[in-house]
Length: 362
Ligand SMILES: [Zn+2]
Image 1 (spheres, rainbow, N blue to C red):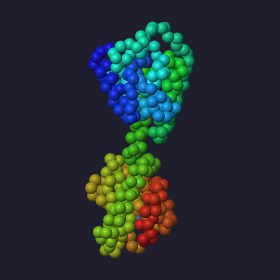
Image 2 (tube, rainbow, N blue to C red):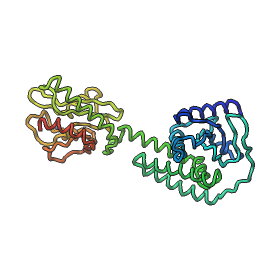
Image 3 (cartoon, rainbow, N blue to C red):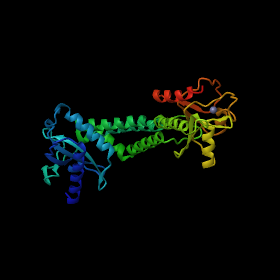
Image 4 (cartoon, protein in one colour):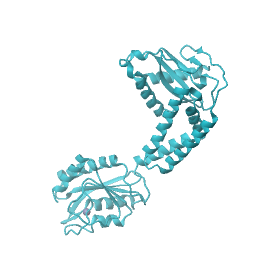
């Protein structure tokens, strides 16, 4: 084995061991096994690095296997380490249960513990093809239909479990493991990962098309609501005659946030939504597609004598904003002529905070 590869693999294993974070964890050996230590390797093979320890040393050794499996799964999912194009996968192995694979090379001692032997593998080609075709249909469907990153994550997890189960029961040449490898070589595993990450990014950002009315990242919007409540409170400290009891923000697809409270100009109230929209326009000229309004109180829609300009619903209808996320529904407003979706927070604490602000004038 090339010294620089061995060094690197040992280094990866060391980082993995420190990640495990188990006091007095004893590394009995670090071995390389799996296809790269055998005659069945391909250019897609992984470095299967097994850190050998004694499961019985872990205090609750009955859960040791599950614990190490979970830990290594988190690690392998979070890391994408390659050595000369081969991925490195890490496992914690019990010294009392050596790996099934014939070839085992000790990285620690730089010697073969057991030499690989060449056996013509028996491969159930028909069964593998059948499984691959079936999974391709499922993957394609999942990518097409996915509306949520979890839809894609379910099939990713399923594929991982399938492969692991195959390796556990039938080894390297099990139908499940081979099917997984064929899918990977055909690029389907990558496609699935890419689709998953795209979905996840969409979920985490507020990007959307004009036609998109769906409110996604409520956790993030809830955080904005909390800031808006603080803004109202601050306004009351600064100048209670000028600043009102509602705050709203425009968030654009680039995550620019422009917020404002309602304000009293010469006896007329400029509502928070109008202030936020005007302020956004003053800064960015126009409201692009895909913006959302977050407001502590749902937009008004009925005539009001002390309000400057039209209702906030009419105002928002004239823009291309399709989503409004509110902390509390104004119980005094009854028209439903909005051309946008209104979502109300599920967070009861935030809702009651927004209600308390609104109750001061409703
Ligand atoms: Zn209003």
